[in-house]
Length: 637
Image (cartoon, rainbow, N blue to C red; front, side, top):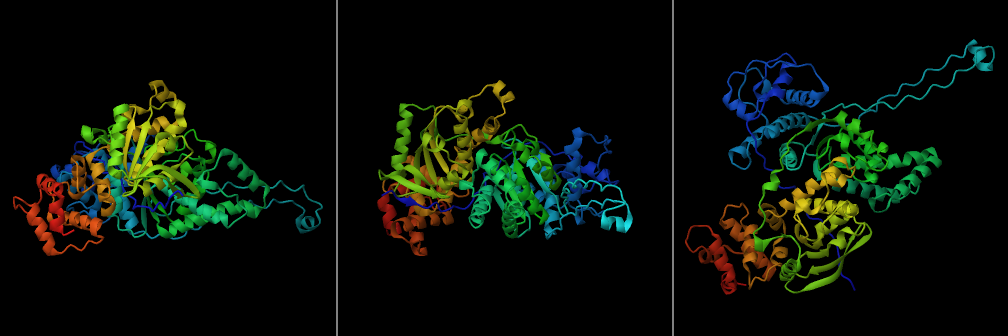
């Protein structure tokens, strides 16, 4: 009988910090924002580097009249002005405030990131948003009142009206007024868009960690929409008036069928679909009113047709949104099925969010070097030897003990896993298993939750002829990247050239897959980096991690992988706290507990720390672990 595996969710992990570089920042937008209001620029309006060196502001720039080409600058200026409001902008001067700016500056001083002018502008805007939401408490908003059409005068006085005589013919009923446009009554959020690797996610995480709001949530937008549909699915089961939507995805036929059903039904039936969306929005609002969405994108009609209703309820109840995206709002759901149903959402998004283009052409993640040749996790080009290498890696982790036919259940469907390890949550799929079948984001997230490491064999060269496979592969990589899943695979080409299309196709294509591939290639490269693999290794619990290795016969690759996990601060040595974690992991794996006494720890430390430096070098680490008899005697296995 096939084994059943429940996809227990691992904690949602934020993506790796996107490290950028750039010169000294420019204060132009912030200063313009002040001068447009007749004031001299306060110190908080100047970027960090400028404040260090400029004591007297230069002469004011001439402010040209507003134009469509300067829309982004003017919006940025208004936010910068708001960011500088309050005590930080007092005429007394003093050091400029800004919690995000301070944290960003400390990261620069520590050498963790390098200065970037475009990032500094976004930091200033986010500081302003943080100030506004810190003192904000949302409450239900009263919907705007619609103006009722005036009663037509029929003439003939009271008797004429009563008996219908002596007056002019009754006027035709007035055309119903258009629904009023929802207007912000609290802080406006932000929508930051730009290319891959420009620092959007890093800056959002900086904001999320710093902002003093209790009811906040940071989540990948894809995953949040899956949660929305799961809640709708639950409510729809209790409401037979609305057709149940299976597996969170509607086909065009099902959309038309539901619309016809609602048209033919009673008024109560028509309102019930909106009521369900409103109930879901209310549930989510009760959990968090400050929502930080990473990778805001709309790819499915099931999402597109409910976006306006869903967010109108959230905004009416006082939600504040911070979103990052690779696209400006006008390009969301571009060329999607029945896009006119989605279009009303775009102006509402702009009304409630300042839109800012971070405007960088460089993806710094592409500068990350991959693994050494014998430790590759992305193996290309693919040939006979490469296929054997992938199999050796898989069976070494499995210690030759492999399960077949394990199943993962998600949303009522079962996904068959061709091969998986017995001692650790490691899975093997062929490319057709994942991308030739009609799987979606929920399925890939379930796989990423169930397995910390996934092997994929034989990823082929892709073209627009395989558009469905390309779309699924893009979704798969997004899910794995968000959950920090380790991917080991063979592919016909390197990530940049794996999806082949011409420049004419890029310029003229209406397919989202071409646009989205830049992000996918970037992530595939980053997922090979030492930083990504180290973070993945540290997220696995000790028993699962050590279950990948034969502790009595560790290879060089095994030792390198273990070093990445236990050198948790990437300092190049293991301190005593890190060593204790490693020894407790070994103890738990072999004895079922983590009770490592101080006496036993000191015996181990004395044995490992050959040069008595108080820390463990890689050579000392490798020497100790290669001799299992020494490990077992010192840790008393």
